Length: 280
Picture (cartoon, one colour):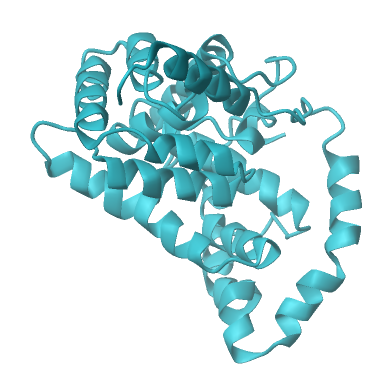
């Protein structure tokens, strides 16, 4: 398990394979828009937020971020509808306050503020905060949580997220002291997601960083699919075998729950909102 490793080379080599892992995931999901959304979330949005004063997101950015999260992980259409029901002014006010709390190193309070929006639970809140402060906040992805030992069964709660975040933040600090490229909570979380997907799709992990970059164009299915349909067929033909291999490799990882507690909490929030006729 990567999380237990202190090897800078191992962490950085896995992180370098993120694009390869993502390409296989895009093919598996059969949705090319995921690649575009991921580029926006990983690079464009953080750049926008870094220069926006005061820092905040608007309702359209919230909806786009939600689309990225649901396409990358489990698709929950109700969450998208709930997120879209927030008024733009409410989204801007909540995110501005949450980002200010992150700047003062109050992750718990920032998470609570972001989670006040309809459709936004701890996982989505962490994605928003991570985009604004990747050097301080990791994203709460199912695959990443399953890759961190000692957390127990996955729960979509603020308490569980804070335990997860503490471990990831500590690991990032240790790697940074040793000169790793994987030196922030977001990059640690990103590397863990990559390792999970490399296992899921049975992709070689032991290549050096130099060979991984040279092999990217030949092994990445999204790119190869444009040149030949054989790659896509190959990925599809071996999915069942890869899934069996994943189950065997990750027996010790915490199981990802079948029920999305975040979605359930948001349904309760919407029913409560309707009773009190609170406006968005």
